[in-house]
Length: 162
Length: 477
Image (cartoon, rainbow over all chains, first blue to last red; front, side, top):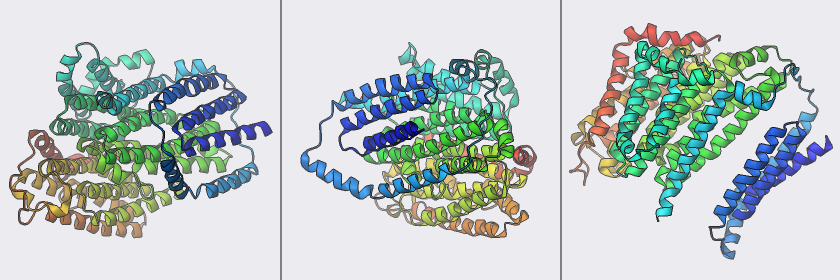
């Protein structure tokens, strides 16, 4: 249980670092790190298949794509970095308050009664569920991927021409 | 037998991008017009739907079975009509053939997503199709690739992600409580679950997600920027069907089929609806930008739909669905008119426009019809839907909200009359002498939408028992 809390804390810290860091490259690395921690958490929740997907696709493939793209950009100058830092500090002043509220909320949640989980009478393999019972969701995923491909074409193709 | 409604646009995208691409590029426009027309015909003429059902390959292969009720049919009709309009508008507005082709591909994917939303009866599948619609919408909003477009798309993405997190968290809790994600399973489990805290938390999160997706106050931050910065055809899609299907329809469906009309949910819906109706109308009054004014007006009109839903009665829900249909039609028409004005004058600033009715009479007339319908002037369709909502509120004892709805209708009339006076009436403004009608691509769908607005109002006795009142049947499951 203590280990789970530690993983959750690490997950939140890594994701905060991902969105707060000024460097795009560090942000990309932070995203990969977040995915790795999430994958560990999924393993601990007895979802090895989801963990493998998370590790290979989100921590692996997507991070490689992000970092390759970021390597094509140029970094901010020192003056721009300082200016950017102040803008961000002014914009996210409320974040510490939010963290306090969330921690208090979590502590209050711990005192709540345990949730009544339904009995797992016919627990099925994730692959069986995915291919035999959730075909419509798989079709949906295929359409989302197709929309993503068109997104890349629409938003980036003309820039290549320039 | 209805999975072809998803299969057809999906296959459309595949066909457009297979070999013979150059040939298909030329046919892309007509393919989209055909798909939108078939969808409208399938709803209006059930025989077409039965005939198309024979092509239900997807259902046969994937063993998927969709069900259509009256609410789904109304949504499919709206999706078909607005898609038809958007294709014509984009053809007229977009000169770049590559961009036009990409728009049509994304539009077909958006239609597949929206059709899926209105046909599934599983909360996780609903979420998957919501994501299809959301991803397609982000790209379409940002497709102009200027600063305003990216800002609008970014705001939509950020708030949409918040909604997604809330929705997924709620779905996870529903799965824990019910052990399944089907509407009926969750509905049964919610009534008998001993975990009241988790049930209330999950319902609250899901409702918040729907409010964000519907652009209701106080979750409306993305609406004015996204609507005003998107290309004209995308604004029509967003106002006409995207927020309606993704937010409002989802809200109506889950409240009626899953959560039930409990006193707490009704109170929440009434409060959020009333806030949106009044604040949206007040914000619309102070706008100079034509499209931003229409965006705030949309927030206000969606508020009416939520007020009708919040009454929790069959009559109120029927009024809400009828207003949803009407809003889809007249707001698409108004955005279409704003596109025509912007195309011809090069501006959306209402203060710098005047007397356009002399140069653009068709745009002026259709704009007056849409505005009056939106403001609830008889005998146009908007009047009847607002009247049904107000009667429903009064009959269930919500006198305050009924009076508020009437008062806000006066505000609606005020900002639309102000808009008409500034843009279309009075002396022709300087530099507008050479302005003319925007062309067939904008005039044709404008006339069709105006006819629907007028027809639905004038022929109400013919449709009230076959189209409007049956919508109330969803109350109680």
